[in-house]
Amino acid sequence: MELNLAVLGLLGGLITGISPCILPVLPVLFLSGGAQGARKGSVEQSSHAGLDNRRPYLVVAGLVLSFSIFTLIGTLVLSALPVPEDTIRWIGIVSLVALGIGIIVPRFESILEKPFSWIPQRSVGADRGAFGLGLTLGAVYVPCAGPVLAAITIAGATGTVGTDTVVLTVSFAVGTAVPLLAFALAGRAVAERLAAFRRHQRRVRVVAGVMVLALAAGLALNVTDTVQRAIPDYTAAINDKIERSIPAPGVNAGGAPASLELQECVNEAWGTGHSNPKAGCGPAPDIAGLTHWLNTPAGKAVDLQSLKGKVVLVDFWAFSCINCQRVIEHITDWHDTYQDKGFEVIGVHTPEYSFEREIDNVVDGAKRLGIKYPIALDNDYSAWRDYGVSAWPTSFLIDATGNVRQVSIGEGGYDETEQLIRKLLAEADQAPRPPLAKNGQ
Image 1 (tube, rainbow, N blue to C red):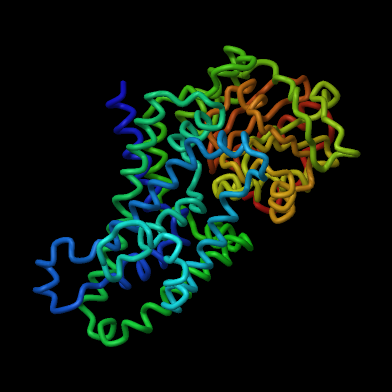
Image 2: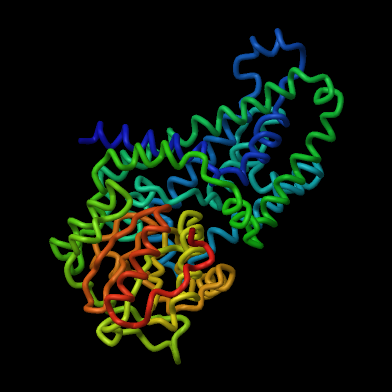
């Protein structure tokens, strides 16, 4: 079993490491992790340098180590402390700014290193600060929410970390490290082989520092999300093949279990992307026990029972999940098009990372995505468990009688879902089939 988990984690990490989700950190890895650490001398001399310069390895090692630790136990640690849960993210962003300035201004870098001068260390030249840069990147690194990462995140956030979760985390980190290290080493190789890099090492250092500052600004202003959404997911096909060939992770232990019918539909959607709408999935569980709601009068909770007679889409999402953001572009179109025809949407925001638990962050994320429909904050994974969810994003399409008619996991299949919405509205006699939403075909 642990061997299977290790293989699963390794494959999930490899796919994540080459996906569009890591594009914002690649310039930093290429320049600051690779090119800035180019070894002096000819190519032949450099090839025999051994551990002459370990900068690419140290940056990547720091990144995967801190990302793994923060993903696994960061939420539990922060929830036990009297500090905002997005503390790690903002510390990471501020640290990136300081490191970027330090790369550009060596004197400032010396000031940053003074508090650690008591630690015995040998001089490693350009390797100074490389591991610290990696640790900082790992604290703000937010890749796509694939099934492996979902299993790790939920286990960490709910305090159910066991041997299996540790194996999955380590193998995922190793898988992610391989392509990232390859990219950093490519940056170093280019710098060593091009005379222009060797002649202008000072400029390379300045550009590397600027890239670090640009990444920090992009993360603070959420520009990275926009960039990631704009780039098609070129790993989607291979990712689907790998994900659909493995069992759905058992991350919904505890809480009120989903009905057998609903769980069968979730499992079917895991394998195909969508459950069979003709089969039906039984009654939709109520969205109960959630204390915070957005986009409702006075923050009042929405009762599914009160929506009987309407077609309802319940969408489980997280605001920093790029896959979720791409799906929400279609959901908001459907909401705008069919709302006055008897169609309602409820977004259930279940956090993947600790900073996604902060209400203000969710409000900002929803505003950027243009979400106007009600949002329930599921910080304790209560509704997540009740519905048997195991990945971001997952949506449940409920007919006018309160029965789940389709479960969708991941991206794609938008035309089929919209046609089913129109069909269910017609069945409910809400209105003749209206025009397609603007994203429809």
